[in-house]
Amino acid sequence: MVNIHEPGPLEGRLEQWPVLATAGGLEVRLAETEGEVEQAQRLRYHVFYEEMAAVPSPEMREAQRDFDKFDEVCDHLLVVDRSALSDDGQPPVVGTYRLTRDVDARRAGGFYTSGEFDMSKMLAAYEGKRLLELGRSCVLKAYRSRTTTMQLLWKGLMAYNSRFSIDLMFGCASFGGTDPDALALPLSYLHHFHPIPAGMEVKARPELYVPMDRMAKDAIDPKEGLRALPPLLKGYIRAGACIGDGAVIDRQFGTVDVFIYFPLNNIDPRYRSRFGLAG
Image (cartoon, rainbow, N blue to C red; front, top):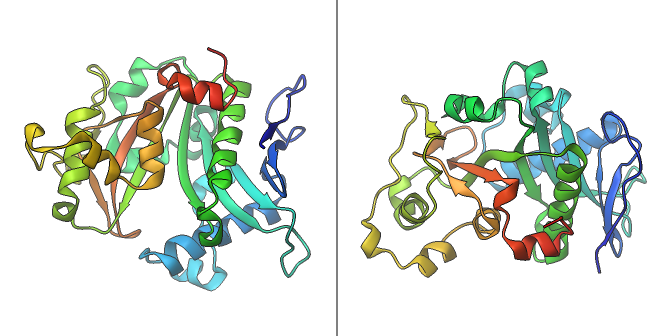
């Protein structure tokens, strides 16, 4: 059973309230120290660069960590296993999300996602609203078969959203591989059945744009299209997310990326109930 911690009267960030939910020996929390951030970066390096096809910079390879300028300004959501200890005597980080609010992005000179997608119309439409960019999500392989791990990440994410009254979540979601033709079914399914609302018009940057409309709509079985999605992207869609126009091939990470548009008021009622959100 997953237990959510009730927030107290907090100001500013969440350092005073780091633990967001627990389930057995697992807990989801915010990183409080540089050491915890580095644990998240090591997990990202292991998953993205050693297990998958990402290509590290020489600095990353030497440090055995995935890092960039956004790590310094954002919050890092962690799932740690308190029933196990790492070599340094600390509980290992087994799952992570990088959370960048609009106030954080301003300090970094913009959002990470803007390097792949033109979000100008969406940002203008949400002027004055509270935004949250999701990124760098990964789970240690041994914990991926435990639905509790991903549930805890979502539970922590929703508690974070509630604390900061977030209006819109967004970011990139990825398919493994760099051949969009091999992904014709899932890309076309997302394009035809889950387009971003009119007026937002988030598109892949012109120089990076890869068409997603690779199959006719009437040639797609929606159930098969949904089944072809990676687990995290499937979760976003089931919860009520929409997809921007065009995909991007990320050569560094060896992925095909799509844009996720996820207003909090779009969340499916089943997910609201599951994660303790107000109706």
